[in-house]
Length: 106
View: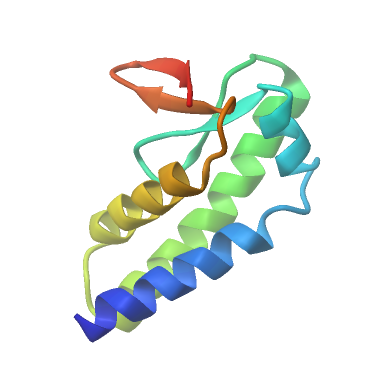
């Protein structure tokens, strides 16, 4: 249980660290990107700058997830699931989430 609490704290820090990009917050507010149930960001709109942002953020997330999995001796998929849950909780009303194979506003 201690590992899970440490992991959740690290994931919280991870998401706060990503709010500087293209800017990620603005992209979410504008409905360009959304959180997927995989723990990664997804492109709601198919534009080169949006796809670039998604790829950049997801690469950084994956690096952090791998590190967290190794440090906590758990599977990468477990970290991704916890990160997705945290991202869904932190997503504000009006922003997009991937649910049942489609983008829906929270």
